[in-house]
Image (cartoon, rainbow, N blue to C red; front, side, top):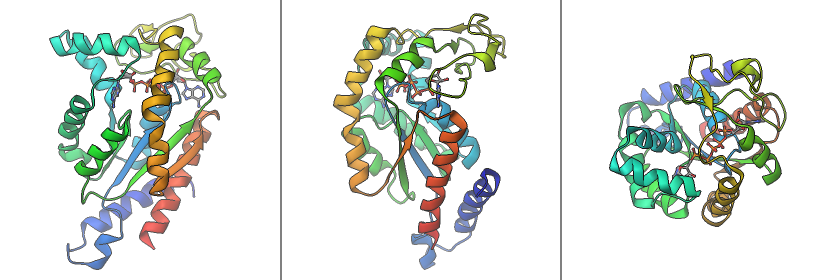
Length: 260
Ligand code: AP5
């Protein structure tokens, strides 16, 4: 199914469901919302795919990394404490992250679904998310698999806009280039006029620590969601458009199953 048709259909399924009476038996089998969690090591492409997927599904993206970076930018006491943890490649504590995400999921625009980028990151966060999502439809976890060598290459090359926060566009393949944003890796200007800079946690030492943190704290989520048959694994080394179309196909199969 092509992307436009698939997107139209996922929106239509949700719209149809909104018209069902609560006691209609179909309301328990048709997804009320499209809730997607992206899991993957740093640099796997979660942010890249979250933006595409959110447009495709017509739901908001919730990126905990972006939320934390905004807190850091604000210069608040919390932001200063968060900055130290992020620059070590460690994780912010589960209670604080759950509180942040709970507040965001309480907003009206998330009722028809969302794409979560960066949460949950521990089994404790996943259990907390389950509680937050009671009676809010299916949750599908999409794992983006990318080997460490490609991640280190991508993240050492990544440049992020200091104004709009977007990554410079990657080229097809494993490495990231910045052609889409600026014409070359050395002309460091975003289309919005902001400067493209290296993220402070994208040095090789911190990237390696983030990978260790992922293996220890986050990778167990793959089994957590696989055991409940809510996991779809995608090869994240492919070109971004191909990754996106495979995610769309995997979600489509879930909708087909849920709606039948
Ligand atoms: P966060 O910002 O979430 O960082 P991350 O998980 O390390 O992921 P990244 O943003 O580095 O990478 P990504 O997978 O989004 O890849 P992207 O699309 O950017 O979190 C930062 C920190 O905040 C954490 O370390 C932690 O301290 C804290 N934190 C956040 N959430 C937390 C939570 N829930 N609990 C506790 N702490 C939390 O792509 C990367 C590069 O690759 C880009 O240059 C991109 O252009 C390129 N690229 C993308 N896709 C492709 C492709 N298919 N081919 C080639 N290049 C590609």
